[in-house]
Length: 216
Image (cartoon, rainbow, N blue to C red; front, side):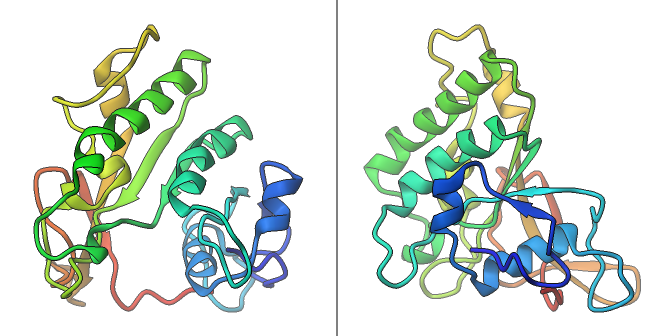
């Protein structure tokens, strides 16, 4: 969720529709990520990386007395924000933290990658142009780094399980639009070290500073 009245974010956040706006409940994580992306360059607080941008937001995590399924909110949230004009869709989330070690359930192995790649394929077939950026994840239930392919959602998609359906979209077009991001610590001398909690593996495309980052 997002604080639309935060002085760094006011006027920068909109929602795909009135229903999504009504479901929004401000949360520290949502505000933190939104600030890193788009906080105003106003001489106070922080400065966002892409301050000249607008955020199209979906609150995927139910707060107290809100009843919906997070997985479905994440899944359909992609279509909602892309159809509302989003070009870069940020997913600062994952499922590895609920698991013990390098493990993935049958549903996440067989259904999740096909479902997520198919919804991307359907959007691309309609002419939408976008990328999906997901965090590699912050370890398992014990805090130990695991293979990022166990982090759910877009992290599960690979060359062997990508699914385009009957759409005139290639598998590579989908794979090229998925960016998985790991975390590194800034050592302060121009060098970086992989964060101890950050997931690993060939699924990761790039790493970025992910520790002691201050935001809204």
